[in-house]
Image 1: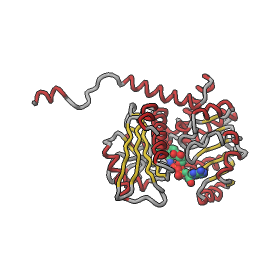
Image 2 (image 1 turned 135 degrees about the vertical axis):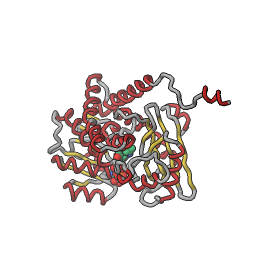
Image 3 (image 1 turned 90 degrees about the horizontal axis):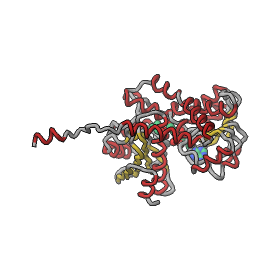
Image 4 (image 1 turned 180 degrees about the horizontal axis):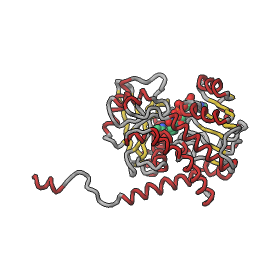
Length: 367
Ligand SMILES: NC(=O)c1ccc[n+]([C@@H]2O[C@H](COP(=O)([O-])OP(=O)(O)OC[C@H]3O[C@@H](n4cnc5c(N)ncnc54)[C@H](O)[C@@H]3O)[C@@H](O)[C@H]2O)c1
Ligand SMILES: CC(C)C[C@H](N)C(=O)O
């Protein structure tokens, strides 16, 4: 990967490589765009095939956060961190504290939170070193684990997408195929089960599958089978890029709506599913519940206020589908336009000069 070429192509601001011998920390903080405000995005811990794969993931996820935060109406830019390592074996206190010091070093340009492989306990360790972390324990006045709120947003967005595909937003009797039943999807399964949807689940973690089978009467399938099952809705809730050349021909679903980030391997896959008449709820619009929830901490966390905003995900999904139909464009393009237009509007409204704290005239007088 030619890194500067990539940064230039997608207009990234900054990439920070964090290394600490003692703890084994190897992390990449990617800051995509801070036009709207500080970059807020989670920290993912994952075993990557190569350093290049880790860098690419951080970059793609950071850009996704710029669009997610903008589309959700937040005054926040986009950033993300990946820590290279196995979250089941390689974590230690020193690692998250070392990482916290790197976050502190950015002096508020980047604020972190949970993502795949990290927990509230990890955020609490980061918080030992910096205030620029959200999703820490509620005992600190924070919002805690964002996953259940993300799940609620996905559930609401899925209903809006179902309305467009089936004429009703009721999910009763609908068959939903869920890939990955981790933190978000577990709560999503609960909402769907309560509404009377039938669940088909898969995960590479057997325990996670068993829990969904036992608690929600889900039918389990092998990871490779999930794409081809007979279902109404495919909910990707594991990692990204699962809507691709191999999986699209297998899909029977009329709706794709799930929590995973970067669901489309390439944008052309969004074009392809659009042509096939599949209603795609753009990933960063439907999964914004978690970031909406943690972002509320910046105002002094209020659960009711945060949930009121999360409810609007239903309307946002309706809106992208409406624009998609009106302009004859795929929903992912409609969502990108919505996000980009907001960034441009705010960029322009901020264009007048504002004193930035360096009072040149008063300093001159003291010389
Ligand atoms: N946690 C949040 O609040 C939040 C917010 C927005 C987006 N997301 C995104 O949603 C997705 C899920 O997040 P999470 O917090 O639930 O993570 P998680 O790690 O708790 O769950 C992911 C699950 O997917 C499983 N998995 C991984 N690869 C798989 C595969 N090939 N096939 C089947 N299962 C597989 C894992 O075993 C795990 O159980 C991620 O893409 C994340 O970036 C999460
Ligand atoms: C800020 C976090 C809640 C971010 C979350 N992992 C996301 O992808 O939106």
